[in-house]
Amino acid sequence: MRRTDGAYRWFLVRALPMRDEKGLIEKWFGTFTDIHDQKLAEQLLEEKVQERTRELRLTNEKLEASNADLMQFASVASHDLKEPLRKIHFFSGLIKEMFAEEASTKDLDAYIDRIISASSRATSLINDVLSYSRLSSENLVEEIDLNNIVGEILQDLELVIGEKNARIQVGHLPVIQAVSGQMRQLFQNIIANSLKFHKPGQSPVIYITSKPVENTDYPEMKDAAGQLYEIRVKDEGIGFEDQYARKIFSLFQRLNSKEKYEGTGIGLAIANKIVERHHGLIIAKGTKHDGAEFIIVLPEMQPIVHSDEEGQAKNELIIK
Image (cartoon, helix red, strand yellow):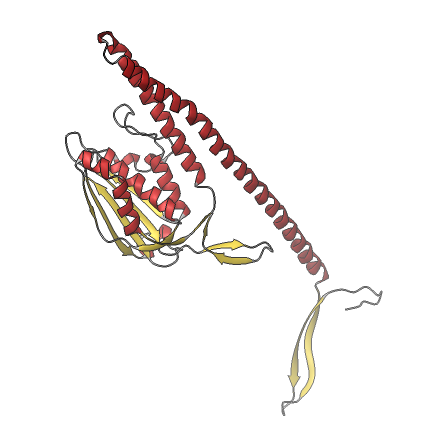
């Protein structure tokens, strides 16, 4: 409203009608409140929010560009690092074959075996670090049948399963919305872990089961969308002390010597990150010398809010 000095100011007006015995309005009773300063403060706050949103959007764009550069660097660096390792591995093998017939080469064989083993471990480490870094990129979600995923993994591991005479029992697994490649990584790492850490002199035994559960069973998952599924991968291997249940998901964390059990210490860290990115939960349980169990809880749906170019919220199935 305009004041006597010609300036316009915001007012909040509230009024109630006062009626007579016949219900007719005789007069109005109410208040006029000058809220001009409050209104200006709201507008200022709105402008600051919009400015901050623009700044965050620019920062996010810079981070995405930086992440893309890092991904490209990791890919190039891994290729450049693996090439000399391939040559070390290849030519060490040739040297070993060339002197295989000579009796005085026992020490040489041992040294070359160490070179080959070290180059193989370095190659595995590069591959695992690259796999871990790639989990930061966006991936579209699709409906996948975990029965098919696990079935394909067991086919890929057929030689190892045969060599170790392993016995793997798989129950019925659910159909969920997830990133297919990441689910393959998740279950391959867990199954391969159980195949690796079996008791000396005994064949690995692995049980994979699944059942639907309620949000109340896992309070950490109370905001998950759709049905929750609990998937358990249990083995009868060497196990581990329960105090290390969370520690084993850390990068480069090993509970056993690399001389006795090969690996880079990244596999379970990758599994943990994949589950987190799918808004799930992974729990490890173990008893030393008496097996280990991994409990994976995944939501059936993956609702993720993503902003379009205009900054309007929209629903897309994207793992970010």
